[in-house]
Image 1 (cartoon, rainbow, N blue to C red):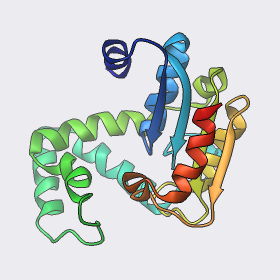
Image 2: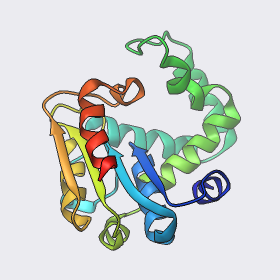
Image 3: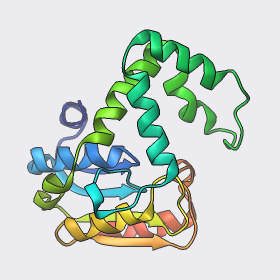
Length: 191
């Protein structure tokens, strides 16, 4: 789907930005159709790298949650009701609709679980090693959503990748495009 949209909207190669599990999708697209992808930036990547990179408790728990929710629509409905019955805390204003979208309906949650579960289980190492485009990998040392060790290992696997590891930052920062993020992305895109 990503490549179809890029083909429809762009006249030439595109820059792909992959956030969290979207990093796996961007890697797959870049390896599958290298002529369509000019460069990649992968932010706070949540990837399956076997035992080569630690995972946060969040990654482990989310993977188990989506595996369970992906079992059936009935299970997804039951889990969704449990997840959405309490108040949403810690989600900054303006970002909430983006963060809670997968939980809006049982069908969306079920599909999110199926797709996210598949992405979280897909071992990306062989594909990442085939990526030939310029690649910027961005993380933060205190990311407690996707362990920074995953991004560090990814930057070692992708030939010529550039790693930027900020001292502080979160997944949600990417929705706001912080000054630090913009300052590392603009020079990369300018090359």
